[in-house]
Image (cartoon, rainbow, N blue to C red; front, top):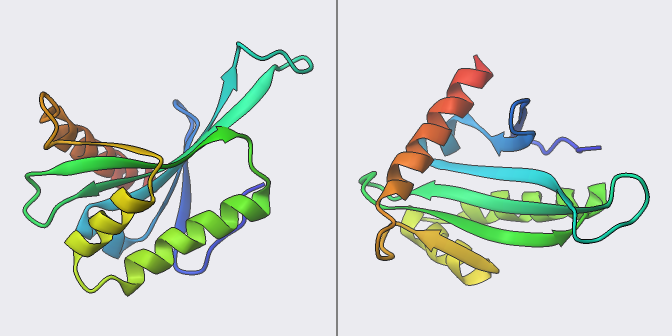
Length: 141
């Protein structure tokens, strides 16, 4: 069960089973939070196997020329309250950032892993993040 977080909308992409947390300001700034749960076929636990979840932040820079995905968590399934607190913390960091580059730096420092468009051969990430933002806007209509 996903708990609502004041100031954020929750949206499900039924095709990918991704949950998005966002608001209009975040999308305008090129920022969203994404959560997904994946079945790990390598570990057998019950009928469905072991579930993994990941939480990442997608972000465009102010010019829309650089982008990144910052993976804050990727491991076994978290409880609802753990997810709530992690997403709420990311949102608070976003709201308290005085400039977007500071938020991006924070996400990079807090992430377990990240990929951004400054890495060799990763210019496609700018288009990926832009497409995902447009998808969120489309699904929210």
